[in-house]
View 1 (cartoon, rainbow, N blue to C red):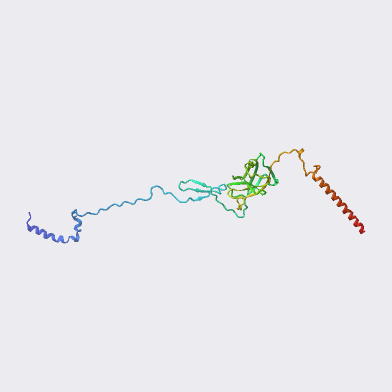
View 2: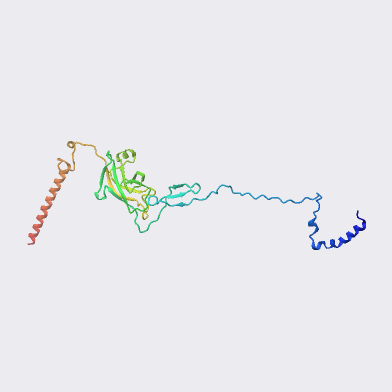
Length: 281
């Protein structure tokens, strides 16, 4: 056991070293850790959860108005194709797209093939069991109509009859009309024996519309006549009151009186002429 004198000597020897501790050694607190007394709580860092995405894992759907795109050539030039961007399907709408052509281009017309317009006035019997057939094609047509209407009109009767509507367009059209059946269906508005005009126009327009260049103009260039048969009459019982062969008719006396009067006028005129010239001589 050391004596108190030895302990004091060691303490005095270590005093200079304690004074120089802070100059050449690290801070004592960094080497000696104090014991936690348990009265204080050390803050522990907490993990902040990453924000959840408000978007779902599904791919985003495109919304909005589908953009129309024009497809096809002449046959589909009046149609608009609409693509649905949601399901990728392609559908067609019936909305026509009116294309503008050169203003100097003529409007489309109708050329009658059967009967030809050079054949003169064609007559048809209304109550005939054989249907009437008309055939035509189109000229200078750039914007094709989807369908046409066929009508007939009579200026004397100031009436118009529709024969068919929305007739499918074809470059060469053939239309068959059963006039006998049509007449029987016209109650109170039957076809009179008269001259008629064939009317053809675009189903999307009217017969009085102003034609656009390249599009079908209303057609009214073919006239024809309709007639009905008269009941049979025996010629032996028929008397023509206006014919010269009908003996005893009222015209016989009139003709004789006219001939006799003209004879008298001629004789008196000639006599006066001859007498007058002789008197002057």
